[in-house]
Image 1: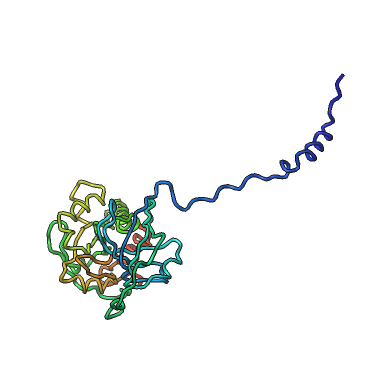
Image 2: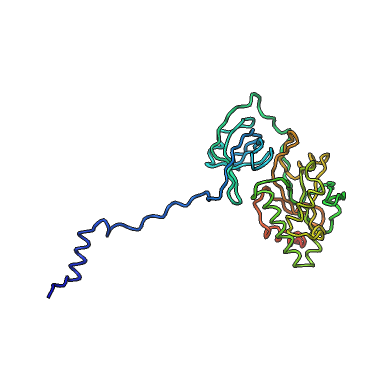
Length: 302
């Protein structure tokens, strides 16, 4: 009768014969990639307009990017962030612009030339809209070609945001318009509040964003073919003659150069009395934030 191996002796044999296998833990998972397989990469050349090292962004006046976008001035972040340290206004650069889902940034940044003269400095500091500031009666032209003004919305809570219909970056103007669409849908579900609120998407590119362009962009943003959407959400452009004063009031950093303007974002909640209730720089807000602001602006604390 064959001898049976004692289970304890078998275990001891395993430990002695295969120490590496017994002591080896599970392989660590591969490091998660910060860039998905669907990310697209484009070569970019441009000129540095301004640098904000605290925010980690720089406005770049880029040349045409083949297969991606026209020449325009846009803000960019950097990977790694330290690449911004080498940049000065007026520098010419070459880089890769990476677009991944709802984000974009620059990589492999190289300074290809330095400006011979210092970049022009703004003649005045940027005005920051503060709660309680009276909003001027800026004149606009809406998607129907109708002339309107901000004061005509007195008695309603007014939400306005600045857009650029040609903006190719999903986490910039498209994101802002997406959030406004969410606000519009939720307000529609509350007729009492809907009737006391108005949304304005304002383009700072009046030469391109004509009423026809704004109308098509508005219907696309709202996901609707019904022009009734414009009853409470209008798409407008600020006339070129009023753009400098308008940009200064709403802290829109911009620079005209060959028909291009710097693309920054600004969103404001204006109380029914025509005064600033809250102002947001950039796109660091969600529909839920502005919905809370609407309620608070409509029922101010006594």
